[in-house]
Length: 258
Image (cartoon, rainbow, N blue to C red; front, side, top):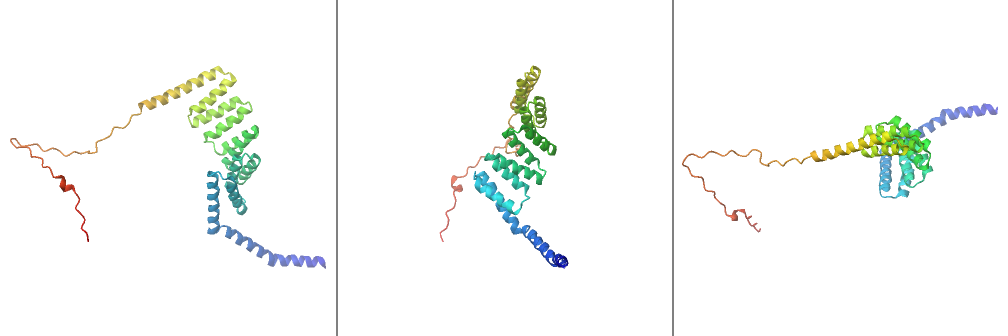
């Protein structure tokens, strides 16, 4: 008898109660997507960004946590909060935020930021893995290869570090990157690599110097591009006298007083 009553109560709940719950949830989701909700989220974002620029971490943290309270799957807010914690050297909290951001959105920036924290805290293998994953998602950023090279250098992988720096140099020909490659060759005592890289640096500096010298200022052109042609004078005619106007004609008329 009791089991029959329980089944009947459950059926009544499915028929009448469950649709009410679904309707309530639907209204809540619709309210979150309302223009008022969007305006509030935008306001909180502006507060967070301005506070970070003005170095007010507590105010920025409060704004970001409020965003996450209403939108717990906001990967951008987690990423920004991770950056905030990293600046305050709260590395555990920063790592947690970056990992959550990456799980919500396969974003290379979150992976790269997490890699930087791992690098800072000495977790070089995790840093290497994070940078490689970020490069798989977005490989056209020189800074990612440079960060990977740093992690591989810390792990004693000089050859892999040099390869990563060479990839960065292919994307952006920077003498700074060449100097980093030279430092790795010097650390390993590779004379051939030292000689070759030194020559590359000198050649690039010489090319930059030549470019500076060959760059000339564009000469100023005359404002009057098409001057009026001078009419030829008839034989025996006199040149017209230039009439000079009195400077009085340039004086402004006095205003009439009404």
